[in-house]
Image (tube, rainbow, N blue to C red; front, side):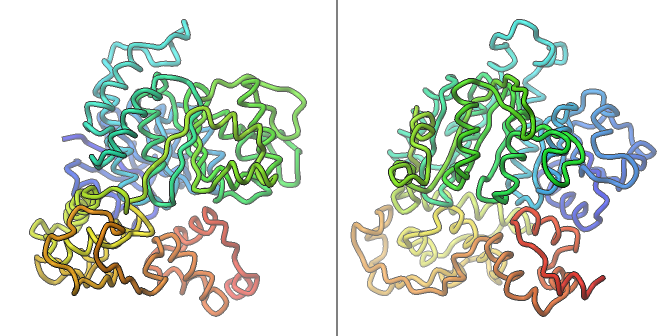
Length: 483
């Protein structure tokens, strides 16, 4: 059983993370600071260290040296992404941005532990290989990623997905730019992760950036870095996320939201393989494979001048189309059962199952929010269920089933028959992040930060970090009332 050390000063976060990992068959130890970890444990004896970046006393990056080769996963907020870049350069195996969901943490831990097992102790680290050729370790990483899941880590076996898997296997070993297209919630980042894991860059970092989540005024310095004094508040030079991905993969999600100025800089990265930090006159070479994703029609945006046409054609070397969940037939039920198993394990209930009406509702509903909406619906049903059998009403999708005969339309997309009358409250379609943003914006005028945090069931630190990540500024009145 892998032994993981959690170093986090926020007690609530530390306890929740410990319970999550223990429920998933990991042995867990915990500490509130680097000093406490040193005093209580032999740090190199762990299989993985998960540490917050900002800790009382020494920062979490100190554990990279103290671990003597033990992989360190750094947890950081959006506001600290630049520091996360620095931690990667110092030797952290990866970073994960707060707030993260359970699956994101479990996937990261499993991937890091799997990669560690597939690399012999005698093999030098990728940075120590001097010939610049594809290393055997990278090839082993490809094999490990593919053997870990017959479908490259993505659930589903319908014909459109089988075609997608085939293209992923063909494209992954190349360095070609890839544009992933699909509706929101279809799993575009999973495809990007599969492309990275099956590539020769698998041992190098994959840096993921949501272009829509970073304020327009900061996007250029976040991506390309900046020099000291380049703008107000730039008290020191910083490397950007493109630079952090050097040798690996840069995944730009929602690239259609990238401002035109940043698009011009990105085009130079693709054409010349070099970047220039904001405020600098010197360029530097980078070796980055770009994977971009969008739910928008970039070609149409290019025609209207909202997206650079030359950048579009640079990105559109290989285009992968993710089908909507409603187009995947029996995959819907398969995915729902996987989510049910995961959610049941989290609360320690192994007896939960879908009733016949729930099974039919899952197959007949159009799922406009795609896989993300399905996951939220299953999580809701598991939490609200009083019995072992989950009924359709607990899913909260309000589909009319009275006109359907048992199994008549099972496995068929909704447009192929039957009544699909859907009427539901728009708030039912909100993701957890959407709900958080909606709640804060609605109540921050008359609630303090402490009250908001209490209502949301999070700490004030977590509330602040989510504000930073989602770009929700605090009201001046709210700041004044708590000062």
